[in-house]
Length: 407
View 1 (cartoon, rainbow, N blue to C red):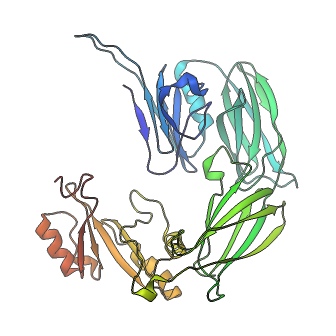
View 2: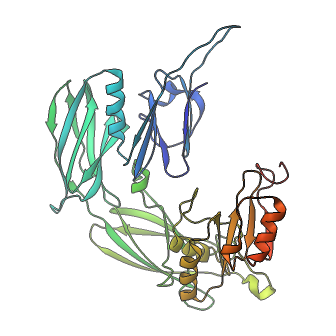
View 3: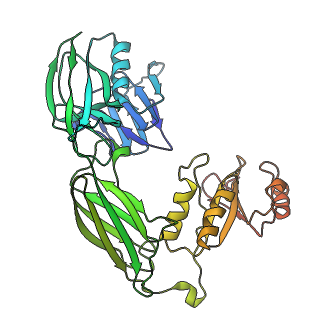
């Protein structure tokens, strides 16, 4: 038994292990060094301090801390846990807060981080490792940083930013109450890839998805560049920055359904531009046989999802869909935005909505007059209002997962 942290957006993290997956196991077997776990993104950090927890289950979207307990009849136990909420993704502040709760000592380090060209690192992190394992990170803002660490302790520290290669590591041993100045002067600036994707059957540029894999994966997930889409406006063209190194780029159109993915290797050097042209082979066109492709249950960045409208359109077109669709929970506010993008591309768009009472969820579409919708009520009231709003379809979503059949 024990407390847990679960998240809809971001990643789960444990000091000594990092971001990854652990099936329920004793924490000692994975090098986990502390009694706190975290959920994080660039704009928040959520720390859970569970003193002396023994077991953990970890995924990218949750961290469950457990206590192995034997209870005899009539016995009880009380567990104490602390939730630490921060408005930015600074995990060293979580470590500092836990030390303060425990009444234990700290040392502090501060300094400046610049690129190898001497430019201030406007936005980045200072990563702290303990025993060669990730421990925590603090934030670099306009070239400066300051953080506190448990003391006494021995650490390895380096600076990093999105699409940059990390600085040289610096080792330090700290005692309680000590203050250190530690400067980083060789964070390596990115190079740039300009990739244009063409389709073989017409020779025209086409929407595509690019999966990026390379030798170095940043320990902080929001700094990683792993998936890129071609522009919705400059069709077939993707421009993105990568840290210097050699990468495999896997380009696909239609998510492996109407074409086979193609993988190429590129080498990126700091502050250099690499131009690459790729042709993908389109094996067949479903609409020639009277079949049209659409994803009729798809959220944007409202409520429990996070895809902004332009990226939603880019992803659906890269997947080879013949029309763009959205159905956010009880919300049609992104429909005009998405419609404007699809009109610029001359692509059909269907505005939908996921009506979400607590007893079932319904996708209704197309929504022509949103003012007629009702989001709560009886099944008859919801369907009647949906018809008045222009909906041809009223569909019961995920019926076996807290949905209509169970209700």
